[in-house]
Length: 188
Figure 1: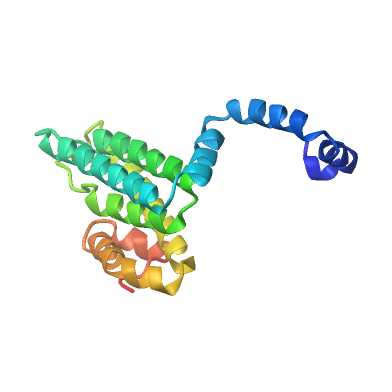
Figure 2 (figure 1 turned 90 degrees about the vertical axis):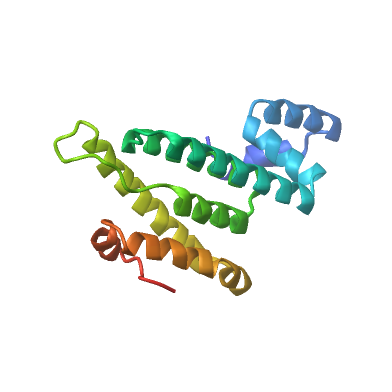
C-alpha cells in the first residue's frame, strides 16, 4: 500500500492526536534498525560524529585490506568477499548519515585499497571469482564516478586526486579495456 495513493488514510493520520501519533511513530521506528540509527544520527549527532564514523569506517577498511594482503595465498574469492562486506558497510554508513560526499570518499578509498592482481590462471577454479571481482570492481567504480560528477565542485576538487589515482589504477591493469567500454575516463 502506497500512502500517496490513499488520500483518506493520509488525512486520517494527520488528524490523529499528537500523543497517539508519538506512540505509533515510536512503534514504527523500533521495527527498522536503519531508520532508528538514522534518526539517532540526525537528531543527536553532529559533524564531529560524522567525522568519527568516517574515520572508524576508514580504519575498518585498512584493517580488512591489511589482513587480505597478509594472506600468502591471496585469492580473488577472499578479496571479493571482503570487498562486498566493506562496500555493504559503506552503504549502511550512507543510509544512516545521508552524507554523499563521505560515501564517495570512502568508496574511492576502498577501491584504491583493494588488490586486483592474483596468481590464478584461467584453468583454476578460482578464476570465476576473478571475473566476478572484476565486474563488481568496475561497476562500483562507474557508480562512484557518476556520483562524483553530481557532487558540488568544492568536493569534486577535494576528491579529484584520489579519483585520478583510482582511474590510473584501473587503466594500468587488465581492466583498462573493459573500463573504456563502460565509459570510464582515463583521468579527470
